[in-house]
Length: 255
Ligand code: SF4
Picture (cartoon, rainbow, N blue to C red):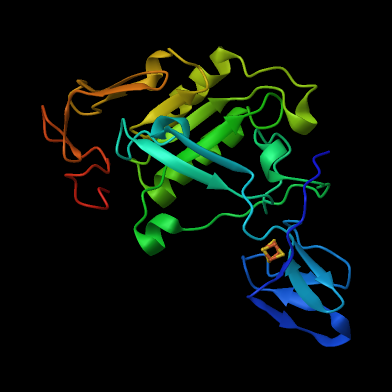
């Protein structure tokens, strides 16, 4: 269990309720919190009818990384990204790969949510599915995810199917077999997705981007080494197909 030092500060976005309860309005959970209890994220606590942030102005992780590590493959390829993370998370995935820096003292079951950043704010969106043996590696689930990405986000949305490694509460499961990732890759393509990438497998042939229209190499990747070889703004420089990239020359909202 990870312990952290607290830096308390009264929260800004909350309402006081009868009987010293409070409602936090910081994220979509809208937690109603009784005295001495915590919100889903464990970072907000009701103390005598006042909601406190337990971790004000503290970071659990600060790093500059290749943007491909996020993974974002179609957003300014080859650039660096600054990551700043705080304690607390409102997802609580059982196979969290960052649990040591995100989830102190948690024990609640996983509960999912889903934010339409692309639709509402025209944000660049790439989807990551960490494939965990016996939990989400069956065809029905993978086809369901691939179809959802195609129908809700569009066929040009990159889908990363990543390799699970034993972590956190799922140490008893084996790493995802490469054959399973490749099967998921095929499921994505059969669903009509144009960009499916196998992640956490450095050197895999699906790391690079090829034009779905003419088949030419567009972005060559090997681990975090990236070389843009066939991109003109957001299009294939060989045949002109739209490839849904964000670059300095591309117009926003390629799809
Ligand atoms: S999860 Fe945390 S931030 Fe979100 S509403 Fe609950 S207490 Fe507030």
